Image (cartoon, rainbow, N blue to C red; front, side, top):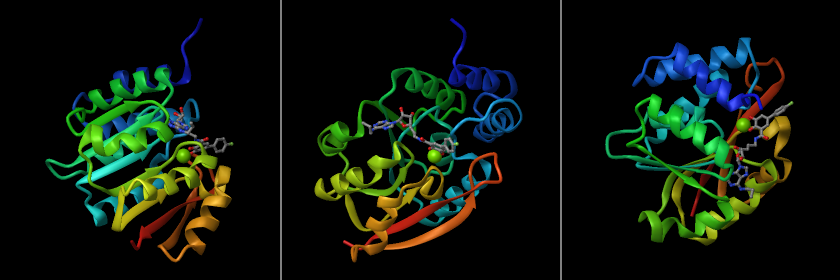
Amino acid sequence: TGSSRPQRMLKAVQKNATKGDPKSVISAIDYYCRHKEWAMNVGDEKGLILDSVLTEVNPSTALELGTYCGYSTVRIARLLSPGSKLITIEFNPAFAAVARQIIAYAGLQDKVTLVEGPSGDLIPKMKERFGIKSFDFVFLDHWKDRYVPDTKLLEDCGLLRKGTVLLADNVICPGAPEYLKYVRNSPRYESQYYKSNLEYTKVEDGLEKSVFLG
Ligand SMILES: CCCNc1ncnc2c1ncn2[C@@H]1O[C@H](/C=C/CNC(=O)c2cc(-c3ccc(F)cc3)cc(O)c2O)[C@@H](O)[C@H]1O
Ligand SMILES: [Mg+2]
């Protein structure tokens, strides 16, 4: 059988990026997905919004739901201060295997813990397994109908604190309507929409930033 899209993306990184240089890994993936083969990375346009929110929050502990090939994992980890940690959850072993290699190629493996399995099972284990008290930042980019249940699970597990920032991808395309209703109508969140475009296209999409008020 032939290669998969994630495997071809990894090849593009190994061919065009410089080992240990996260910026070149990000550019290699963006170039490949814009000019060769589209893939569902947050991308360069929404990536700039992710970067600016991250720089503002400067999280010590960050969580990503839905690693896929590790593009946003690299974008987040490259901006973390020394000693800060990113935990990223991915339940597809083939995607996780590619992501590990892309994260390592960027030289960010010491800042990232990739945990394989479904978020619903792993979120309740964050405290006991990784000594997490609470997360400062959460990036939601997994199955869109899982944004609400996993946000509620994070609340119930006491993993959000006053000021925790949730940033959700794709709230317009493919869309996460229940999630927007949830965070925008809840008195426990202060939400803000960042209008942008679907990765590598002119289609509208955006990120929703929601601050947990405790
Ligand atoms: C048990 C399921 C919920 N828990 C989960 N726990 C751990 N990992 C999970 C996961 N759900 C999904 N994943 C993983 O996240 C990733 C899934 C992401 C889903 N994303 C999208 O569907 C998506 C889709 C588009 C898209 C937009 C327009 C279009 F025409 C086609 C696609 C754009 C995006 O930016 C997207 O993020 C995969 O790697 C999957 O294996
Ligand atoms: Mg996405």
